[in-house]
Image 1 (spheres, rainbow, N blue to C red):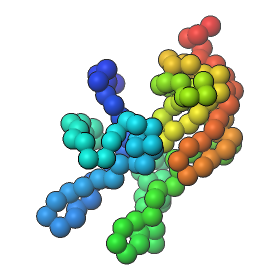
Image 2: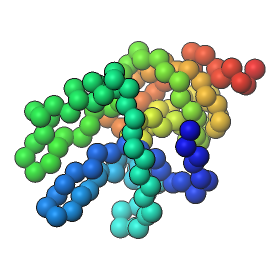
Image 3: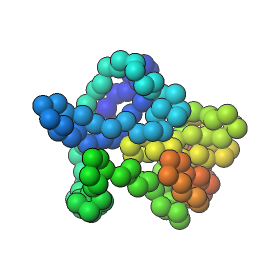
Length: 145
């Protein structure tokens, strides 16, 4: 397990792409929307290699089909969660409305009413939007008992 320092502002997955003589990656809009990053600012970037299971690698290749690219760029990635999906999340913070906020792949935000920072509940994804999903707790963190 990787130790994450307290000064970490953001963590998301991105693919490095070649553009001319340089290499770039895209920052998800949610990182800007939630104030984790500010356009025009300079940040220190850490890079971790991603070890995919064979199932994840197959899913990753499937979602990156050549037809999804458009001239001059690519379409925004689809949300990494689906309605009805059940998964474990880690609540990182509380939003303005008092709901728990978890981030999953690529920094995608999952809002969980009633959850608090440090909780690690099992949730069911109820509604999926382009940049955020809403979920309900189906099983609370067993460590909280």
